Image (cartoon, rainbow, N blue to C red; front, side):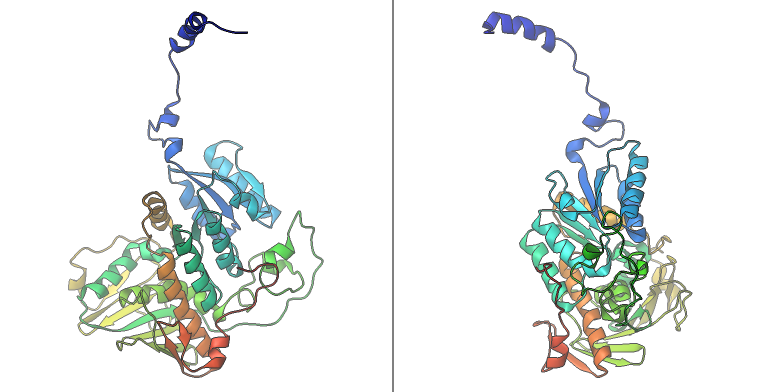
Length: 424
């Protein structure tokens, strides 16, 4: 029916004359964040550690988590319930297909907390899909994957944060700043704690493979070589197996401690030039003469560390030293070094401030503390050290070419084949 202008205006007066009721939450009032300012988040492969990350994200008022993809149905449901309880609704969706998450145009960023063997490829697929990424560590299985990950992040202009949260934990930040500021004198040695160097090429006994609706074993394996199903793998006990846990476990711990040593030594843009293993200790040297020592530390501070706690690091200069560890504590050679303000004690495993750094950078498009370039070189150090350990001899490394010098055996170990169809 054709309306005259008079009839339209008469009817519109009734509608437009009534007050429009808009919820305060839609306007960002009463402490809420308007939807237009929220970061919509999805998850890929969220297990126990991933749920700690997720809890930190859910505490942020400007985040809305909407979908979990996991190849294990049990984990899908755990995350769905966790999210819906937080928002007091039933809106969180679950799927076993990560491309369901990556294909949603409303999702701005993803949290990746799969097993190590999926980290790099999942990140590359995510940035290609236009998503910013927070990825648990270690973010790569090889030197080549470290390069591919950073290359993809930069090529597609995405924000990336590795889950090396200690870069945003106060006592570690304070220790690194003491080293970088010159208050310890000229830095000559940095120490990174590591786990025992060991790896296995064995297979666990084959068990009946569950249906894909419960565990998608083929997708869980992804780019890794095929092997028969065993429930221990998918329940987190894949650690120590070469196909799933790169570099004799060194990158897992080194992603934190070696990374911090890189930072303290002002070496984020380079790597050591030589590596040599002596039993369970690895000695490395930078081109400027600074030494990097990777050595054991137990869960109670064993290994001649002054400060107790996991992931201890020590930075030594001509005029003093400092140690920091996950207890939030710090030890120094001279109490006067703490006069500029002792840091508050915060557990090094708490990702809250690291998550906040990522979210702020998603909005500003700045680079976060553990960005792709920092992660690339820090991870390469751990991978190069593990290759030297496997070869059982000193190896020389070129930080510019990111390759071993005149060493075909070592260079062949810089990459691994990926199982089809999982290629970059």
